[in-house]
Image (cartoon, rainbow, N blue to C red; front, top):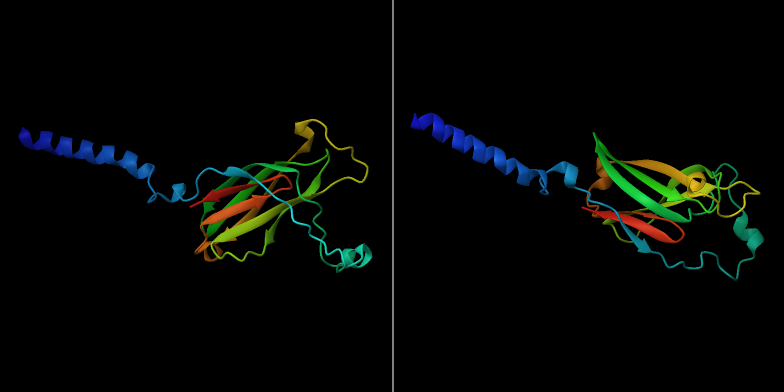
Length: 166
């Protein structure tokens, strides 16, 4: 009689320990936490010594992603077999934004992966409007090899950036 009770108590204690593993760093679903919003200080991206005509010249086969999204509202990193999917939601400056992409940025910090959220805007779209008409979503996939050594993933908008840490 004591043996089944002892086995039952040991099984119950083992099962109750699973709750702490669920919230620990050992669980791969917890590797990237909730995203946080930070403000962005814009640095002048063009050289004032180069005329604007020359700065606008680009290769014809390179896609023009458009301006930065006004604000990044949410960001998630979902683990998938072979890597992760970075999904970002944002608000465009005007309604009707299209061709929304996450463009990878070069970083000096090897432990950080940065993306800019960009979208094309209609030529005659008025600024502002309801949030439902300005909401956009973009995603990018990242391989496990690219994620090695990465501690922070961030998505940059015009007014803010969202980041998650491991």
